[in-house]
Amino acid sequence: MISFLSIVSFALFPVAGAILGAVIASFKPPTPTARSYIQHLAAGVVFSVVAVELLPEITRDHSKYLELSFGFILGIAVMLGMRTLSHELEKKNGASGLPLGLMVGVGIDIFLDGFLIGVAFAAGANQGRLLTLALTLELLSLGLAVSSALGKTQKSRQKVLMTTSSLFLIILIGAALGALIIQYIPPSVMEELLSFGLAALLYLVTEELLVEAHKEPESPLATATFFVGFLVFLLLGMTLVPSGG
Image 1 (cartoon, rainbow, N blue to C red):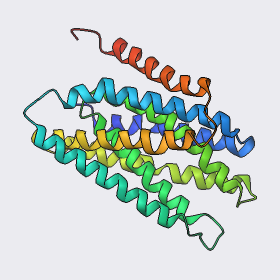
Image 2: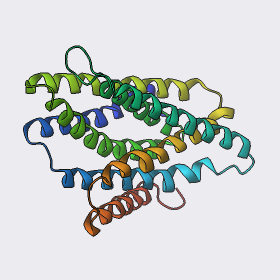
Image 3: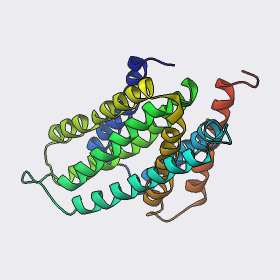
């Protein structure tokens, strides 16, 4: 199994992607259409990793249907609870003028992203690496959105970048927790853990990335970026895991 430090090191990629998005947005905020393209692309690559890499691994043992059901239901319950909490918090602002609710909601979201990176390595090193790359695109999109939102309330570009950079370091905490769990939990509960991650990732694609992407008028090109992302990661997965290997 891949080491704890290696997993946390891989989590630096989505941190870098998020900070890059924040920097881009602080200097030249992307158009809503451009953000929609990025969100479609990110949704496609995350869905590809889920369908092609994680799902076959999770369903390999056909006798574990109760464990898989428990983990999947728990994952959906957690994501729906987070959604409710985030919506409540987004109605509040901090005394400094920062959108406190948004910050807390995003912090919870990216902590879970980091946790899923750690958990994905339980399915295998290649699966973990592919999910890390996929979530790097998702965090790039989130960095663009958070920096743009903060730019509406804060005049200082430096403060916006410092705030977003500090926030996105939470990914490392989530990844560290996920990495610790897979190092020490017994193999008998691995199915529950992976199915929990499966549900969370499906929620990320269908209820976050695509919902945000569809706030803009749909176009054939935007839709095509979803399938381009899926195909690219499908082929990448086939390259990393050749048949018979």
